[in-house]
Image (cartoon, rainbow, N blue to C red):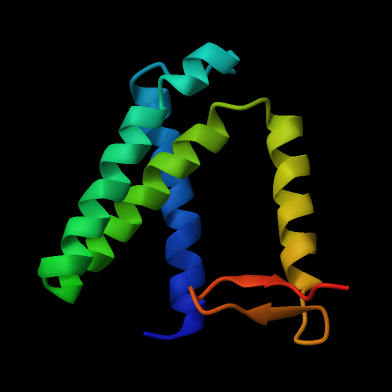
Length: 116
């Protein structure tokens, strides 16, 4: 499988999440309080990913990582469309602008800004 297939599958995943929300009548723009209700769902998926990383097959790790993304996409779908698109653009641009001249990989494995 190549990068193009992976990109296509991420788009397909978004459509699946959208269809899921539509099927269960969850396409409303959520209030901040209702978005907070999603945190335990997201936390559960992250916890399951951690367990998989610690002791399960890479197949299970991949499935749990996709579950994390599935719930995260559901949260994005639950935010006002204009605001969600704006945030997506900002995060994409911010990360696309990071280079080895402006950022470095810290010992924990996170790309962080080089101090002035």
